[in-house]
Length: 342
Image (cartoon, rainbow, N blue to C red; front, side, top):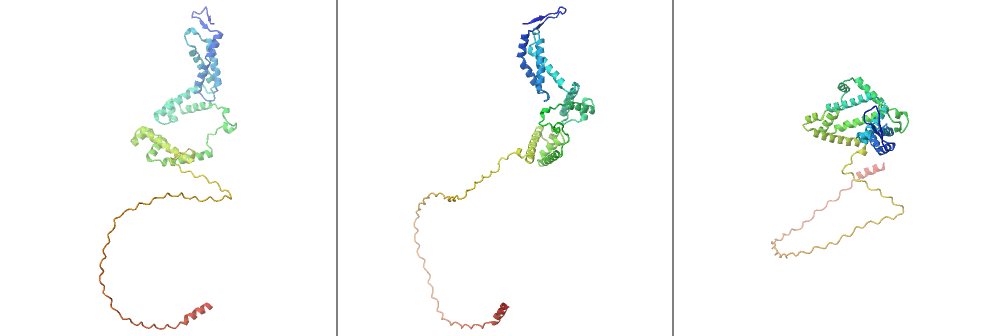
């Protein structure tokens, strides 16, 4: 049931007010609209803001919209309520924010200008260049950053322990962190030095000297797309080389891995008779080759032997008499016996 509210002093048409039952029906029907708008807003806000706070503000705005909606104006209720709910959520965010609206405005302008200068210059702008583009000084920039950092809120429920070391972070790295960082830098320098000459030039000019791809392509005589391909190839090689030394679990697996070792043979219990030797399987009998018939060879006639004249007879000669043996030399034997007796 709807009622019409009239005012004698006002010539405007009277507003139509819905009954309580109709308002409750609108609220129940459009409650999912509040959840949709809250989910859309949560994707753009910090994580420390609770969903329940925004949902509560959105439901309150939905009730207010149901009470103030006039169906005679021709505006659908979901559009009318969406505007009210979105505005209530933004008001709740401003109330929860520790930074003022002016600080947030300066922070957004700084981020937008920094992105534009990065795109134009091809590198990160310095503080002086950023201040000149914004028409301010470096001191004001530092003050704006300080105000934004001061407004950053951390949730105490996100820490696993309640020690002071977890709540108060140290900006300066410790000795262990510095040692690991130096080791990684050393491995990185060696990996860059091991790259091919062209890939090493691309990595050095693009990352270390911060030169744009267009200048590197002009120096090497190739296109920018080719420079992008060379950069991707070099980064892949550097990643594999660093993982091989620092994190072997992430190192690439070779295409032909080594043959895995054979499993260990279980020990033979005592008292087990030795296994009989394995007999070689019998070889199959090979049939003999069939005989090949050869033609008979005709006999050769015997060659005639030449006649040999008989040798002349030689009369036997008397053998010369053998001389008698010389007498033994007893001097050598006596000398040897004397030496042995000593």
